[in-house]
Image (cartoon, rainbow, N blue to C red; front, side, top):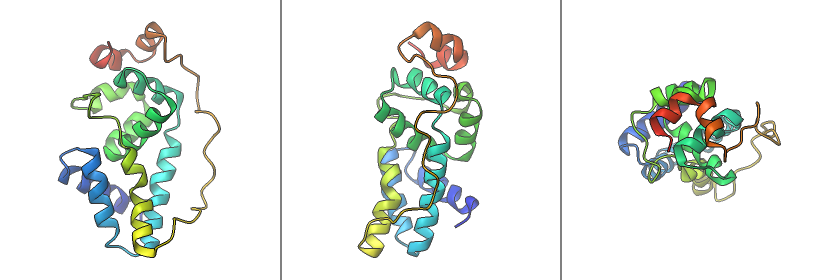
Length: 172
């Protein structure tokens, strides 16, 4: 599976799920189990590489504004959700997290921003196909800390200054 096929699966399942991350994860599992196990591992590598690439302080800060705060787990699930939003939103947010103000049509912290199940979809599909857990994907380990300049997620003034468009549109 190449990168284009990866994003096509993400986009088609998001559209079929009407943007609901849980439904999207269920559809992903369904579609991935129609593939061979090697293709599922390829999908998993694409997903994990992007998940690790999004481990950025600036993205964590923007997620904190959108979610009204973001613990370690909440940021993990946000990164999964962000991948589920498709290539344009993902790449735009990784490049400039403040651009999320323009990239997202709307955002409801009660239903958006939590893609935990998306992060497990490939593992679930692989296990259904093979009866065993996903093997090591051979990817470099994620960095121990987010990349970039740390941001104080408790300092609203700092968040508003660092992410002015996201703050103006989604901040408290």
